[in-house]
Amino acid sequence: GQQLNQSPQSMFIQEGEDVSMNCTSSSIFNTWLWYKQDPGEGPVLLIALYKAGELTSNGRLTAQFGITRKDSFLNISASIPSDVGIYFCAGASGNTGKLIFGQGTTLQVKP
Amino acid sequence: DTEVTQTPKHLVMGMTNKKSLKCEQHMGHRAMYWYKQKAKKPPELMFVYSYEKLSINESVPSRFSPECPNSSLLNLHLHALQPEDSALYLCASSQELAGFTDTQYFGPGTRLTVL
Image 1 (tube, rainbow over the protein chains, first blue to last red):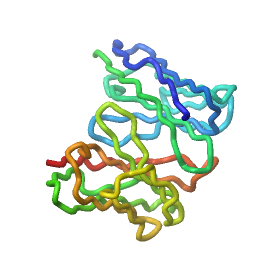
Image 2 (cartoon, chains in turn yellow, red):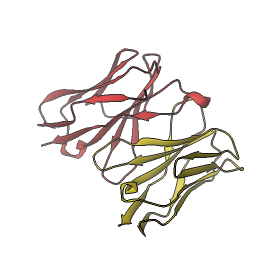
Image 3 (cartoon, rainbow over the protein chains, first blue to last red):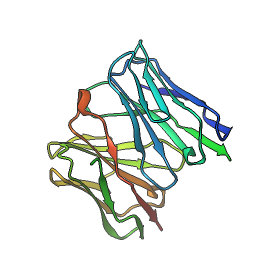
Image 4 (cartoon, rainbow over the protein chains, first blue to last red):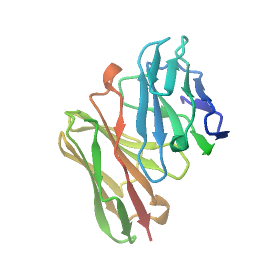
């Protein structure tokens, strides 16, 4: 079945540093989504990407839909303590509503 | 407004109990989803409803019974659960199932503990 490889698995960074994480797949996706999840809460949508090559920003966050449609990355600039959480990528490729999730990147920010 | 609400926030139940989880959205979305999530893992899809009809059942045990009474509401009925069913149960909705309309918005979840 389809799988997403998300890396890194975890990151421990200093406040103010930039962060980069990515997801790759052997399959093509039509939609890439990036979510952030805080402990005990539901995932919150950060950025949605719908077109190969698309580069989209949301405040300090920037994400890109890879030109091959098999990968995506998320960058966070000038990290702050509230960026702490688990970040998930997710891809969709059909008309079923099924999302394929990456395993998540756990981000910790040291003040 | 991209809000999906879920009740209750927390639920503790015994293995012989019957309980229900509720999910509501008022975004006019026609697709709704139930997920199960274990700690530090990604959500696992359980059920998909499209236009109030069950579209996908990911081989979920019959002790979980979904219901979509109308386009805004989604229920998950629980009966004779096992301790390993303890997890965060997430509801999500999307405008529809395909293309630009398949972006899913999640609710805050129900933390279920089965004793």
